Each structure stands twice: as structure tokens, then as C-alpha cells.
Amino acid sequence: MIGRTRSIALAGLAGHVIDVEAHMAASLPAFAVVGLPDASLSESRDRVRAAVTSSSLAWPTRRITVNLSPASLPKSGSLTDLAIAVSVMAAAGMVDASVAARAVHLGELGLDGRVRPVRGVLPAVVAAVEAGHPRVVVPAGNAREAQLVPGAEVHAVASLAQLAHDYGNEDAEASSLEAVSAPVVGSHARRELDLAEVRGQREARWALEVAAAGGHHLLMLGPPGAGKTMLASRLPTILPDLNATDAVAATAVHSLAGTFDPELGLLSRPPFEAPHHSASAASIVGGGSLMARPGAISRAHGGVLFLDEAPEFPSRVLQTLRQPLEAGEVVLHRAQGAARYPARFQLVLAANPCPCGRFYGTGVDCSCTAITRRRYMGRLSGPLLDRIDLHVDVRPVRRDAEDDAESSAVVAARVRQARDAMRDRLGTHGWAVNSQATGAWLRANTPRDVMKPVYGAMDRGALTARGVDRALRVAWTLADLAGAVTPNADHVNQAMTLRTRELSS
View (cartoon, rainbow, N blue to C red):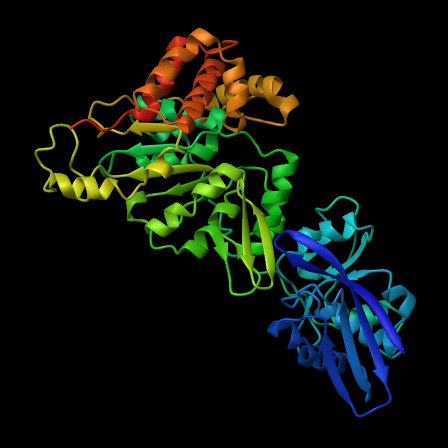
């Protein structure tokens, strides 16, 4: 006899519906799983057998072969445990095979028969619904997460015995096992931050507003204690809410990474990621020995990636950011396949002017030599800095600095107004902010007389061809914040200043 049901195999955020078939033969008892399973999936044989017997059900004494089709698609993880168990029970006649075949089953099995929560339920349910299979059985601990998907008919179960009873097995005892909650890493509530808490730094706060309005990347250069980290951590507070597409993509990434709290619903606010400078390239970009997992740049999708003490990051880590900054996504290739993750984030770099951090103003307290300072800042390569739209100096805060800084709510209102203007102008091209506009569009729509200072800077070598496009994007953002229809010469000159300035000695 053959029992059939369905499950999902995830390759990055892309989910593929797989047919799970169990065949029973009159031969020596054995249990095999075929169809390119990885080690953790192959171990499901022992978990399934123990879960079935713990549910007061008799394990079939036959040769059982479970096939995961298509066999050419690599499968990994414990997401298919429940589907394998259901297919075996359907083949043995323990449950109604026609009912089991109509649903997609997701979940890991415990040895006591509990159905344990798994990562990646949100993208898996999205894939099932899009493939025309809306009925989905998920662990009770993942029910809230699965119910976020429109059109999904979610059936939550706490144990295998409960599911077998629901599928018509009267011998299966309705288990009294408690549902296992999905573990969430790093979901602790963050204190509500406000830009008004930053004293002084009028110019840096203004640069933060420009970055938020146009979606521009930002470099802040200044001594320790000047407020660079405070400013960066408050950038998400002035960004607009995520749109529906970005909210689903960001939530799916965090679901796969295990950092999503379903009690909070879809992510509506821009996320903030601030990895330590000892982080590896795999933790930043994503990686893994088999199917690559999302890294910090994908968890920051739709939000902010903050690299504090940027020159202290390994050069290899910084260089891996260059391609995602341009493409807005990252494709991680492994022997078992490629995983594609969204990675459209705002990069904020913070750096001291030298290793000792005292090379500002007159620089008399700095103990670093000229070559030491040059080598330190040289860790931020030219190609990386060329992708940073805004370079701003963050000076030490004076004792008499003003306290009446604008709140995040006030600044966020101006940012939303500027973004509305961008959306009206760029929406027909599929762009939301000026940082996404192409160079061809910028050069065709910027007044010709306004372009002269930009081309002059390019002829002098102060700007590269990429730098010209980025200066124009900033100029358009400055115009939007000022309520102008197109940028003027002042906007362009100001934009070029923001790209070429350095901390004065």
C-alpha cells in the first residue's frame, strides 16, 4: 500500500511543495527515507518511529520506504517529520488516506509524540498557499505565525496522537501533552528611543534626516563619545513603516532565522541590526555548510544595518557588503543549491578618526602617527566608501549644546512628506526612494545647468561615475525635503560636499 501527503522544502525563502509517499512491502522490517535528505532529515526515521509508538499506535512490521519527491531537490531539516509520519500511517491504514493527502504537513516530532515548532513556517505556508494547497497542518507553537498568511486554512496540532484522532483513528488517544512554544531568539522588547535624546549634533541629525528620506547609506566619522551610536540607533525611529511586501519578506527572514515573535504579528517597523566587529562574513552575509541561512544583512532588510567601529571589521567582511548594497539581495551558493535572500537595507558606518580616537580639532592629544592614521582609515576601501552617499563629521558635544532637539515624531513627519513626493515621481518606474533611481533617469531629469558642477568634480577626480549618480540622488532628496520640484545648484553643491568631506585636522 502507498500513503501520500505533502510538505514543503525550503531553499532560502523559496518554498517548494514536495510529495511525501510511503510504500509498505511484505519483507523484513526496515525503514528508509529517500529523495536527497540531509543528515537531520535522515534521522527523522527514529523520531517518527518513536513518536508513533508513543502515541499508542502499532508500528507496522514491514519494509517501509518513504520517498520525498521530486527526488532531485535537496531537502534539509526536520520540517517534514510530521508529513513522513502521516504518510506512513496512511499507508498502514491507521488514518484516512484521502484526508491526509489533502493537506500540507509541517512540523518536527518529539520522541513522546509532541509536534514541535520549527523555523521557517511563514515562508513555508506562503509557498503552500501560492501553490494551491491552502490547508496546512502546523505545530500548535507555530499557529499564530501560520495564521498571518492570507488564504491559509491552518490546523494546529500539539501531538501526533491528536492528529491521528482528527484523521479518523479512534484508537489514538487524544493526547494530553502540552503544546511546545516556539523558541524566539533576540525578541526582547527594545526601549523606545527618540531623536530628541541626542544633544547638539545639529548637522549630524540633519544628515540622519536626509538619509532616512532618500534611503541613503551614511558614514559618521568622529571621536569616541560624540554620539555616533546614539544617532544610528535612532535612525529607525524616523523611518516610515514597512510596506506590505517588505513586511512579509522581513518577517519571513526572521521566521527562518528564529528571531521572529509571532505574538507581535508581521514586522511593521524597520528592523535594526548592529553586529559586533568580531562577526564573521557568514554571520553578516549568511551562510552554512549545507543550505545557507540568512545573515545580518537579510535580517536588516527594510531597516538599518549599523557597523560600529567599522575599520575594526575584517576587510573580507566589509568587502562582502559591496554587491548586496547594489543589488538589494544576496544569493548564497552551496553544493546543495543556492539560497536567495532579500537584503535591501540602509548601511550606517561609524568610525573613529584614528586608533586612539583623538585626532580631531587640533589633534594635539593624538598619539598616532600619520602612517598609522592612514592605514586605519584605509581599512575602509575606496569601492566601499564610493557606495556611501553621505559622509558626515560628528564633533564632540560641548557642555552648552542645545537641549531642544526635535523629536523623532516631528522629523519622521518631514521624512514621510518627502517620501510621498518621491513615490509620486518614481512610482511608475517601480522605485520608492531616490536611492533606487538609476543613473540614466537622474541624468535625463536633472536640469542641464545643475549638472555642470557635478561633471566638473568628475573631471577633477573628486567624484567617480558612481559618485556622480549618488551625488545626484542626494541632491534630489534635498530638493524633496525643501519642497522643490527639481534640485538646484545649491542642492547639488551641498550633496557633493556631503560625499567628499573629511574630518579636518
